[in-house]
View 1 (spheres, one colour):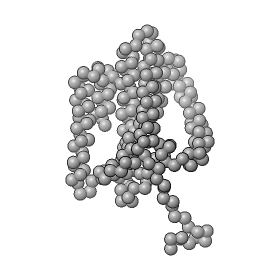
View 2 (tube, one colour):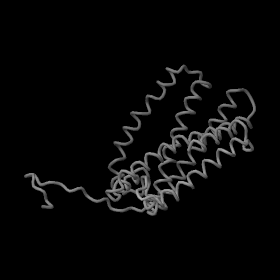
View 3 (spheres, rainbow, N blue to C red):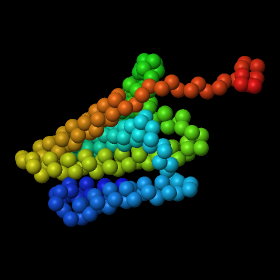
View 4 (cartoon, rainbow, N blue to C red):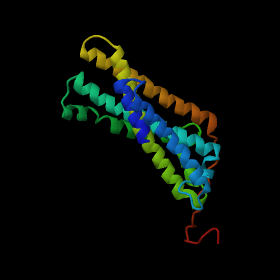
Length: 226
């Protein structure tokens, strides 16, 4: 992950022909590839490879990074825009984000009931819950992989958007505010494409299985399975 992130940062600063960027990309791709045979031959692997044989879970590992990478870049570039184009102070920029939290809370409250009838395929984020119905012996590893993919999405997504932003600003002309706005707009468009790609992957690959119901005790406290 560090190699890929550093490679994208080098590309945004020095272009695609930079030798350090190329070396970072090679290392970022070769090391994960070498990890596969090591885990395959391990008696007790950190990441059981059979977790990736399920189409649903494999798709979720693609969806999760995109869903975390897109908003991470948006918040970063919105901060840059408000402070460098709108000339807000850091405190004013922070206050400008305050409406985000109540908006999310209201949206979740309004859409939770309609989404409950759609299953896990329509709302892609809900598909992440499929990892929770893995083999009990693999739930810890599945949770760790999901968390790692989300962290990867935040870091890698932001580095990709920074690269897009750097390329757009190098090719833009005009006053600094116009150049910055052009780069931010291009980064926003790329973030939207990441989210759209995640939605397409979820809609095509993630099925809509019925979630197993958790056992409930009777009102008198007895176990129904007993």
